[in-house]
Length: 284
Image: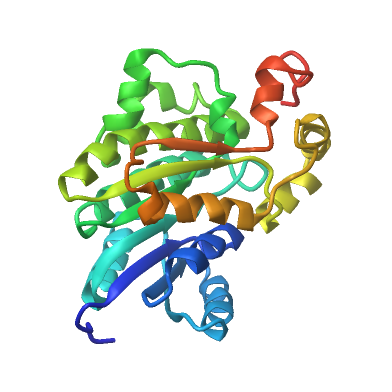
């Protein structure tokens, strides 16, 4: 597709419910690129958005591959000005090994931020979907925070703190990846700011998506159901509720917000640290 004059492009990586919910709120009059590891997932999401009046194209992407991410950046820039990035791709503890989680959720996010930070347009904005799990990881040392935030992407998985003998459990890999996402966004916000653009993180709790259903049906399902029951809100969330936060962060009302992480979990984290879901009683 040839580049049209004044075309604004919003790139959605991860064509699931949360990415779509945010895209619907911020993409009117813009060209949406839906990118996913599975072409059929991107195509299905594109049909829904196209039927709702959005201009959409699709692409495949492996976020753990720099050539794949770089190719998507090139395709997006060829269509117009990249004014929006919604990074919602990832794998959960019940779906993958520690090594795969670190490669996709941690390294993949660093790659996406680095590559799109080279082309994001002035006035542009992005959101990265992290997780409440990052808020349940115990405090890291200052040098570990700095390493997760600023180590060049291609060196990230070589950090001593991420060695296979140090990260042996999928949940630990997920928690450190999501903590790393928020830290990386903080650091990238400085670089994106030099281009006049903003980037933030959203950390959802249990949002009813296919990924959440995998978790609820998996070995930690009972623990997740208990989180919902004990949380102050007493329920799980919806993709549309995350979409509302995404729209704030990517729109004019959020113009003074960058480098921040927004926890939207119905109070599960509050219950974990200060309520009946304390660390001693929380599920693994």
